[in-house]
Length: 78
Figure 1: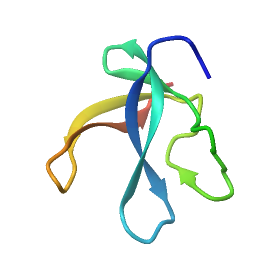
Figure 2: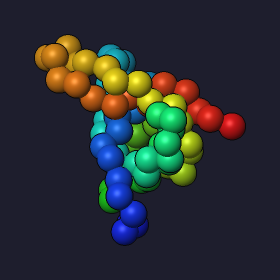
Figure 3: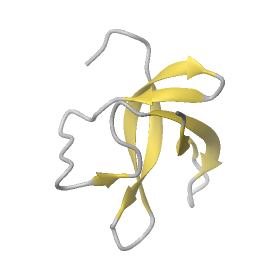
């Protein structure tokens, strides 16, 4: 993968039927932006990520329905 420091970032999966987010690792770039890395078993035929691996995204701190704090990718940075 990479030897750079990474953080866990969640992103929404599309076409799942119910709201679903999955974690992946991302490289922090500053100003709440991160470069998404693929999971070891990433399969674009199986999961449709809202933002593809390699995308630079803005993240917010969000809480899951169980009250767990996560970093959530919310928009792609051009």
